[in-house]
Amino acid sequence: MITGELKSKIDKLWEEFWTGGIANPLTVIEQVTFLMYARMLDMNERRDEKRAERSGKPFKRRFSEFDQDVRWENFRHLPAEQMYKLVKDDVFPHFKDLAGEGTLFAEFMKDAQLMIQKPSLLVKAVNMISELPLDSADVKGDLYEYLLSKLTTAGINGQFRTPRHIIRAIVEMLDPEANHRIADPACGTAGFLAVAYEYLLEKYTSPEGIYTEQLVNDKGEITEQKLYSGDLLHEHRHHVDTDMFHGFDFDATMLRIAAMNLVMHGITEPDIHYQDTLSQRFAERFPRAANGAFDLILANPPFKGSLDEEDVDPKLLQVVKTKKTELLFVAQILRMLKMGGRSATVVPDGVLFGSSKAHQQLRKHLIDDNQLEAVISLPSGVFKPYAGVSTAILIFTRGGATDQVWFYHVKDDGFSLDDKRQPITANDLPELISSFKTRDPAQANTDSNDRTARAFWVSRDEIAANKYDLSLNRYKEQVYEAEEYDAPRDILARLKALEAEIQQGLNELEGML
Image (cartoon, rainbow, N blue to C red; front, side, top):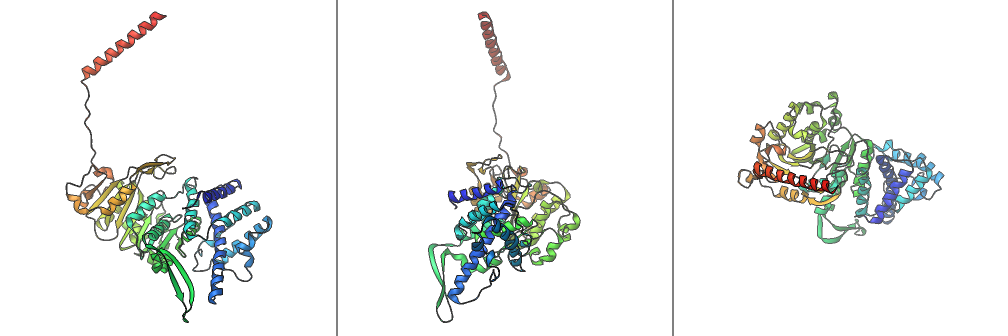
């Protein structure tokens, strides 16, 4: 958790950008990301220099002997005009030079530009970022998350983040493992991937606390000591850092932010790519990713918009012939999963009950050719103030066939469902998570399967008979309480008596005049 003092520093930094003429929140975060990256490059270089001094082993340098002036600690004390010229003309071009094939920012750092126009604003930003604890692994992920939370309080061209508590509930239900490959085909700021990593850190933390691992050279000398705070993920660290997390998006700005978000959380080399995952180009460029590569896919893909059919991968159109992105993404996610791989995908309610041929075709494929585990109905205010659309979470497994589908109705998510989204006490998410983990399909054909309850089962045959309709209200039984009313004559008599009383009062008032 970050302190109030740190939040205050971020708020002040945000304010400086705003008053300095940069009002677009994505641009603010992007520019802060570049400056954080510049500082982290220097921090990592200094760390490796000290390690090389101790071990005598060389390392791949980020700065040559001719590039020392672009290091953070060397330019941050310069006068405003001199610093501005150096950062614009040398530091940002250095980012592009570093963006060689195979590096983290290889695909999108080449477009990095300094958007800050005032030298005084750059100095303030550099000074504030110098004070942030970017050397603390426990703090910097939360710090960047707080910075990203500004996107939910500032309008930005219809772009908004999936609420973090919704992501957390989804991740807990799917319960990722340390050997999984996890993807988000429309990753945005990489919220799903970052929360999945946080969850794994918690899951694989030993209650025994801190222990030490020593690295010994061939002479038997201790060359390095690593301290772990009960971190059992270290056995899988190479996989976690290089092959566990995969994100795709076609917004280069969001990708830069996503990459930094994951790096700030502690993932060294997340696999983040600029790519439209619905296009034929995706399958050509990433054939493994497009064909059964992932154990888990966590996604909240774009709800609205249609695509040019010529741009869509023909293999997706064989599954569902449509231009609607919300349908195409579900089909693509199924294709990207391994056999037995699972996904939790947020979809608009229209996907559940749409009557078009494409809607029914997708739902039939989801149920008859795969295992639809759960349909979780979310309240319509979850994405306010930016969208009031009703949504649901589909949880499914690739392959097999569906027998029973578990439905759950979330009425409250811990926040008010108006534009303010203030915290409230009513919260169904903890009960959702525990109910999902303990659900038992054997109850589907018993008296305990109460269709009036918040959670219940529906058979595949019943769903098929209803044109594969997956809307909760189609199957939920409403409880109506009988209301008893007085006889009409009695009501009419009371009305007449009341009318007479009013008339008497009016007569008395008139007499006073």
